[in-house]
Length: 260
Image (tube, rainbow, N blue to C red):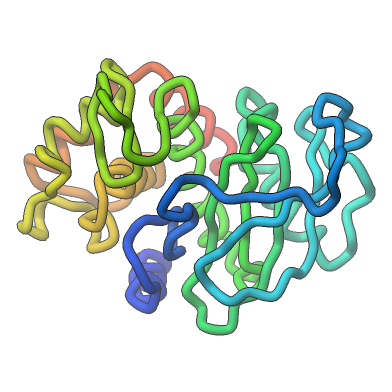
């Protein structure tokens, strides 16, 4: 519970509302923003892959990056990144390892960023973590749980970033959730018209009330980690998430890993 309190205090310092856990806005207004550091790279050749530079809303110092191939670092992990990578390695499920393209480690003085995921140009995801939190393993694990829910529910097969003309599913501020997806159903039920409730008891914490996709991610995180949650609306949200096969399997995998 102390960890949750600390996390909410950090969230209160963040600037903006659309984010991965404890971060401000990972995506630019027009969609995901990453760029390659060198031109002419053949993305299909794993050995040719290079570090992608992520556009952050915060001023951050880049500490280092780990390119991930088939779930493992392509190169030897630098000593100052090794501890963070070890936590990622222990927490990130094997079934989703092909989704992890890069770990980017940063340092942010204002303490608004703890973790964020960006879509990679390779088709996977870039996970960014703040090295300032390396000694708080529980917070890093919690962050990874939150971000993994984004990886599953914002995958390009079920979600398109930005305003989509003729969105066949549910258009939220972040983009278009495909009809039949869990995010579409969640937003339609709990965020009609992309507007959430003003009743605090209907959310697991204040951050969950900032956007539909963050409400889903924070509810998922609280469900996985066993936060003391109560209230009919929160219970209904958890019931919806637990009924989704992908999220249910992810939750079971994460609990097993975290208990281990």
